Length: 342
Image 1 (cartoon, rainbow, N blue to C red):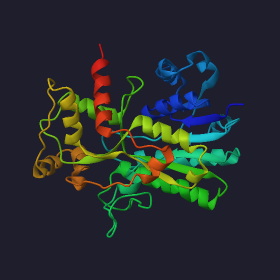
Image 2 (cartoon, rainbow, N blue to C red):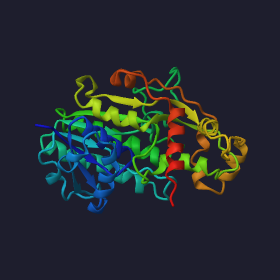
Image 3 (cartoon, helix red, strand yellow):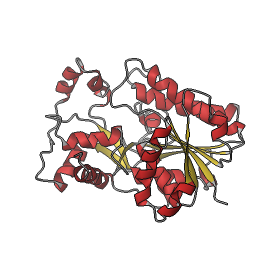
Image 4 (cartoon, helix red, strand yellow):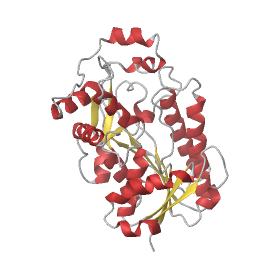
């Protein structure tokens, strides 16, 4: 009998790709959404990409759940074999009150893990982030970031988003250690996720590529991201389910570090006739603008920083190399160009 995966935050950009790959791998998927009005959005996004769309309605179902409330979690876990917790806010700008990000992330992760544990579910995959690994400076003596590194959430230079991902993942590992040692937890720690979305509801990371395409900025800030293709992130979630060697592990799922300008240049090369800004702003200009714009202020601590990343564990888990991030940037741009709103 096919196994059932409870996929939280099923309407998310990454989660839709995960749902697609789970369905293609033969799983039944029960997706959680904040409102059942979003069920059709997920179904319509995955259906065109399935090799056997005729069985979709039998294999994909939904339940309404709220990360901040206990109602419905016990019922949602009934008959579930694997919990895949992807739901967590990822804003374009930082909130005025960082608890607006931190509390849903931490409490939501614990609520999901507690419900799984109470239901006797032993396999849990949690979507974390490289923000929980490389959100602080590389410790002295280390040459690259890997899964042994942890962001210091007390570092005053860390953003609310970085704190939320770090504290949520730490809470998950603490719960397993202190309350549920029989729970087989794996965290997937992707970087900045790009790649063609399955529909036009795509969220923050793809919006960065959209911003580049629209030449919204006269110059680009001198900073970058550990970047990865969304299909690799989705596949990592699915492949890890049945790999005991991933139990109790974090898996930093990244291809390479790419600066903002690297993304822009890759897109410009593919679309030379488009107005794509590739000029980099001097750091002092960005720091001046940060005095008036909180969103810009949040990136000033990492201006000019280039992170070295050890993705050996991710490559070993997938059994292949990662998709090249610059190609993913171009594919994202191509989707946005080909699917412009009317």
